[in-house]
Image 1 (cartoon, rainbow, N blue to C red):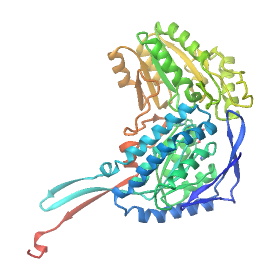
Image 2 (image 1 turned 90 degrees about the horizontal axis):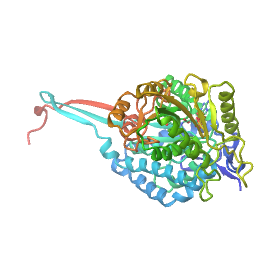
Image 3 (image 1 turned 120 degrees about the vertical axis):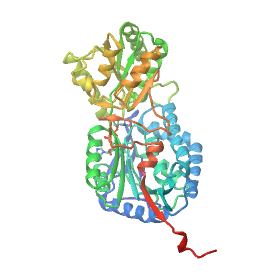
Image 4 (image 1 turned 90 degrees about the vertical axis):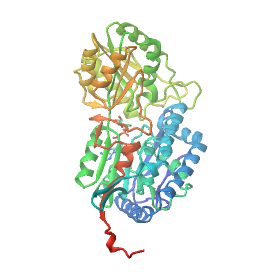
Length: 491
Ligand code: NAD
């Protein structure tokens, strides 16, 4: 069955018929499962205007009442977890367990945003001069927008939506056109949560729809998650139009393996980090840098783990890794591996190309791949592959390994596996990345911490989640006031 995915505008499911349509494909089957509308500029304009009208009322709703629909949404998300997780697996390809995991991380953000009455508080001073007081209040901005990627269709919209609306803004989601069915499910629940019409809206589409949002004068803030070239483009166009922007980009995450690390634990965690979600995580380990004797043991063990990973359709029992998102993505990744091998920049230790999954011959499967002796200066060492490919590099000392970690344009995550507190402490201090893991493979911050990408992995200053989210979605107003006693009637 092919599902038609509509927009949700001003409290109504809307068919933006003037726009084109795109097919949504299940990457395990290679079969069309949905059609999504590409919302044209005129309909985007209607959504922004409806959002602005809703904002003018919503911002006056007391903050304790604004969070009540979020409690309802959290309960509905818990109740429908299984159903949404299946949708994620079917359009995105990851395993059922991975889909449940990402939803739980998304729900965590709804929970944190339920604490906005405390988080949004300002501060004040009495008597900054004789009889004069000064206060800082946080006020909402207006219509806010998030443009999200394909790889976490349940979690990433929830990095932004709950904070935006609890702070008193209107919010419009433009999800990835590759995975719009998860957002449609989320919006079925949002529609039952009790938000006034126009406060939360969904517009589907790709570049034309995004550009219409970036250029609309009533859009005040833009959150983006996706690849670095698009993050740069969106950051420059949004800020040139006078909007706030926070744009999370791509990654190439290095992990240092010290010889004193617990090698069994390290291998298990590293295999999940590199090959989980078919390597399509912005926090995937994509470069492992061994130090000294760790080279031999880790290389052997990770090669075994890669070769033994069970690949297939994510709803089938026992499957540990699903397909990559599209046929183009598979071809692109295979091309990067071939180029790295042919140029002598890497040797292929475990080759995941040219293998299929029985019963799913049309799926976009690429098996785990390990590249050895990757030249740190080569193109392959510096390209975000975004597939199940782990590159091995080797260093003699921790200083050399940290130099390799920091010789990268991205800065989303860096990790180290070691039994030494002193080495871990040096790494924590010197690694040039915003999210650091120590004996952790995917250092994903909890919802009450900022998702702190650096360098080419982030454009802006306030990150998503937690207190940064509250600051991003509010503007500070400072009031200085004097009330002379003699102006009051004597009581
Ligand atoms: P993408 O950049 O292709 O698309 C992201 C969003 O931007 C989609 O909604 C898409 O419709 C829109 N878009 C694409 N091209 C556009 C253009 N030219 N103009 C305007 N809008 C455009 O990213 P993707 O392939 O969906 O996701 C994978 C990327 O996202 C990877 O690079 C990954 O590292 C990154 N990512 C980063 C984080 C993070 O937290 N830093 C998290 C998840 C994913």
